[in-house]
Each structure stands twice: as C-alpha cells, then as structure tokens.
Image 1 (cartoon, rainbow, N blue to C red):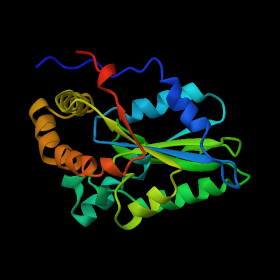
Image 2 (image 1 turned 45 degrees about the vertical axis):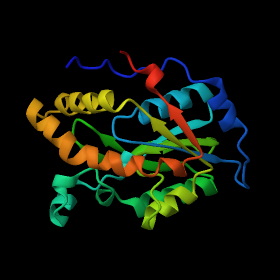
Image 3 (image 1 turned 30 degrees about the vertical axis):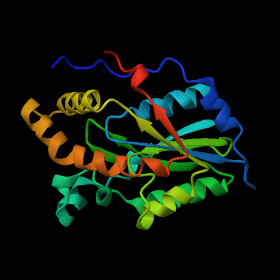
Length: 220
C-alpha cells in the first residue's frame, strides 16, 4: 500500500478560530480547548495549526508529555501497552490543567514528549501568564473515568477529530517505522496496541462538543 503523505494543514477554518475567541471567559480570562482523537487522526496537527491561526496569546500543550517513563512502565508491567490510558499520569495532567485555568502570575512549565527517545521531557514547554488560550490535545481527553473525568472538567470546549481509518493506520505504521521499529513490528504494534486504543477513543466521540472531520485534508 502506498504510504499517505504527512497531514499538512495550511489553514484552519475561520469558524474554528471564531469559536475559540467567542468562548466565555472565567475569572482568569483564560480558556482551554481540548482536542481528542484516535492515534494518528491528526489532532496534533490541528491543534498546532489552530495555535498558529490564533497567534500571540495562544499556547500548545500535548497530553503526550504525561506518558509514564519506560522504566516506570516496565516496573508496572505495562511497557507492552504503552499508549493505553493507564500508561499516562492522568492525575498529573488534570492538576496541570487546573493550575493553567487558574492562571498564576508566573510561567508554568509542562512536560513534552520526544519521539526520537520515546520518552517524556520535564519542563519542555513554557506557558506564559499572558497566554489566554491553551490548546491541549490527546487521545483520552473525553474518557469519563477516574482522573480523565477531571481532565474533561477543565476544558472550556472539547472537539473530537474524525479521520479516514485506513489512512490513519498507515500513518501510524509509517510513524513507528520512522522512529525505529521494523516494518513488521510497526504494523504488529498498531494492530495490537494502537487500534484497541483507537476504538476506546472513538467510543467517547459523542461526549465532544464538536466533531472535526479532517478527511478533506488527507491526500488521496
């Protein structure tokens, strides 16, 4: 099968930026937009494009920085399930969102995720106190259990990204290969780990405030 070209968003529908700008502001004047979607759906690309479209005052915060480190996953016997809901520090993510929504008068540093290392990086993202729109994205923002429910409570609006499943799978395989997996191992990982996670994510799509169809941006 021919590999899909990387998903590129050169523009964001002005309706989406308008939706963000029109969100009611709480006492801090800051809003948090949450973008959920299955692995490989394009949610990271959309989130970053939205931040660029909004411009100064918008900040990007991926959920992936809250991956547990491989050493901890191995200790818990979860390394073979890396990427499943229980392999993230969901409580830590929820607490960070609570802090950001309160808008302290100092920079807040958040973890990032290095795909080359496949590890989280502490303090990799700085959220400036002047940033009044935080766009966060991740697989499990709409899950209604345990700490994920606390995550959902911090979102002023939530979107769920829809993408062509076949293209999404091929994009995931290509990503795993790019970062070191052999082709057979990459496809096996997608089928054994990523796709069960995708089904879980899709099962919660109705909980989103808005569905965003990215299939129009996927090269055919």
